[in-house]
Length: 258
Picture 1: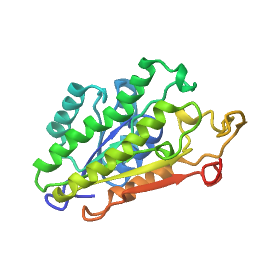
Picture 2: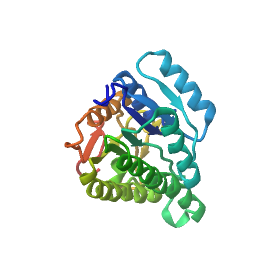
Picture 3: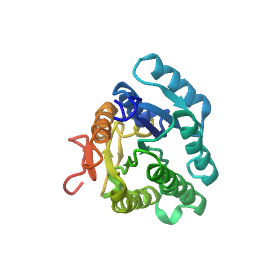
Picture 4: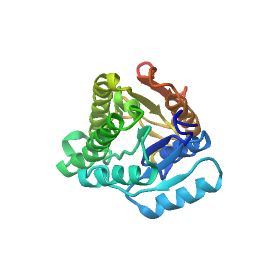
């Protein structure tokens, strides 16, 4: 994987790249030849993942801790990426959190704000810095892939903050795609349904269904399938874009009445 100008590997940033689906994305991008900077709040987790995946071969993986909900921390992250790696070709906005599952009237403002900071403000702040770099570097341009989640279209019960922020990500994806296209900036979204990770361990045991009363186990898929889809999206030329993709467990109760 080269940038077509100086023969060096293309550079990606993956937020939440130290665990779960983000780690799977990082592994797949590195195997495809990308140099990957992974970020998150826990330095020790990032460094362990970088060491593990670098030992598997492929391209270089570097760990750069950051709080994506904090503007100064995000600015520092992208300065360090450019300082260490020279340019940026891909941003994967993957990091996200959820609030405790409860009716919306029982949510606190603090719980709401925590989810908004990570899932929406963080995506905006990282997108903002990436777009600045994409416009200023030579050759100009780059790609952003947002993790929208199936909750970007259809919520689960008792998940108002998560659903609201993921709906917001869809709007930001479209706005970024519109504003970026004349600068060779492509922005797309991958909506993921039931990929197995630390955040989805309860799904196979049983989760609340759409009727608000039934608890039922749901099928999951290997996160590698999601990672492979991200590699495909990332590998497109900048005159092509996957605006939205849904990848999900075929037997999960999403299509239909739930």
